[in-house]
Length: 250
Image 1 (cartoon, rainbow, N blue to C red):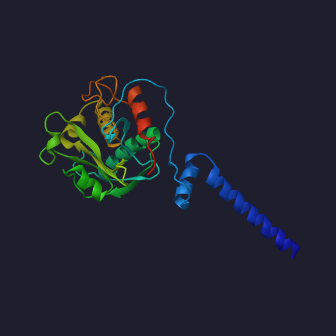
Image 2: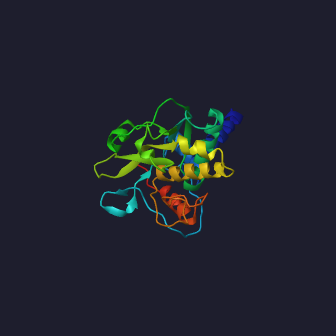
Image 3: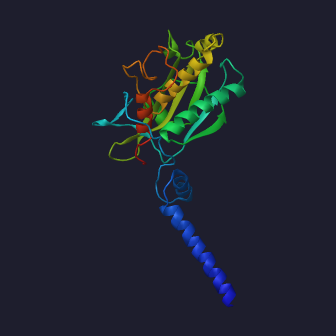
């Protein structure tokens, strides 16, 4: 009887210690566990630690707050799908290419992305309120200017997100979005020696838009409107991405 009581006490204390660590412990993994168990409302990840510098801009601001950007909810996963049709590489290589780019943005922002597989969905135009109301997974795909008019001219890709409010205060959060890459531009880059580097830069630029960054006037940043040879995020881009990962949970 005494031995069984002691075993039960040890089990009870172990369970109490486990829940204390989960509920009070720091770190993104414990935050994700709390979210899974329905406790608390913690960000699922932690933005990167980057040195200050550079410039960045927001795509959207909270109503009446030019200093406060619209962000994704860091306490919820961002689900995305990939349509590899019209991409110059095989489906397997295309998916790996996109997932690598998403992983890089996730590591900087701390936002948690979840890949929901391939899809035959096609990019579509529409007002952001309608798209936000549906809140489908983010779509990353390739298209031509004949299908997506915004790709006309020298545009190699377009990206963005749609926001909605969940309360009476009008506060907005991004809930869905899309990145559409120009099939013709990517096909042309296939024949260039540094084409793969530029394809990656285009993807990262559009993923920057997806998480909420706007164009900037500095050519030192990848979020500059025109690609003038930069192949990776600049210091301002990095700080902007970190800021986009520090939004409030809803």
